[in-house]
Length: 207
Image (cartoon, rainbow, N blue to C red):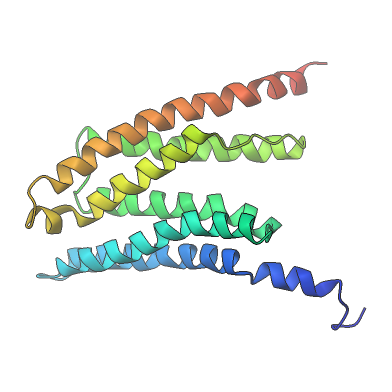
């Protein structure tokens, strides 16, 4: 089959469609945000790097809405987009939470909220992978979307953290409260997903 074959063109077009490019950008934003947070700890007087990290994070979070919206509006759904979109969200939240724990923004009991969020994402990803082998799809609920939104807002406040506290005291505290709210939603939606998939797990084990 020649490279000019029309069957190949839609595939390449979908791979490099605008929604997918936004998703790729969100993945690339992860190391940039992490690098800014890391550099802020290393270099004295680098508190301004918090604002750079927050700016990148906000742009990345906004693309989380627009890639799905544009894919639906322009009928540009693709397999790589469906695969990468949830991975990009988990990378963005998970790695930033690790960096915030490392620099002391999240500490003490609040670490449990971060661990709940990370553990849930790993468990649900594993469940989805197993159910995919059975050709069973577990749809994303509206509450799960709210959970992601609360997570992103909480992480945004925590990225600002000490830099934000210098302008408006309590920014870090607001982030911690929202992080606990996200953890509670995370537990509930995680249970919801497990309950939806439990029946298929039991059926698979029955002789």
